[in-house]
Image (tube, rainbow, N blue to C red; front, side):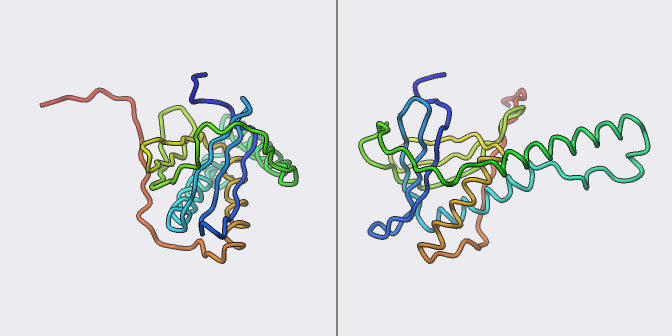
Length: 186
């Protein structure tokens, strides 16, 4: 793991009335944290992107139509898919929203960064990543598991309710896919 990467241990998202922004704190396993200001505009964009990821990463039973399930291999695949879905839902149910966020973490930056843009980056054979591009030229990248998407969207609902913000908005959501392929220059 490089200096800029670390496993996420805790996440906190809260409304700061004085700044009229949300403050996202990502507590890392190395006892450091990254803090990012989220504006209302960016929050709405992030909400739409995360909901898109949630819809695409959760396995569903609808992918197994009756004609396809007739073979023994298809039946086994369907059973495995249902089992994975049940496991993921159980993990989501067991998320801890009650523990206090640890405040004794060392910040990686002097002050919270201001996110200017967010996107979902898809890399082949890896989970999608939420990338928050900040005004100081830094980016915060978070690998999105179904559990993390669920946790962040729940926190967004609570924080925006406190702020009096709505989350619904049609927005130019940008999803970037990085596909390993050979490029030809002409």
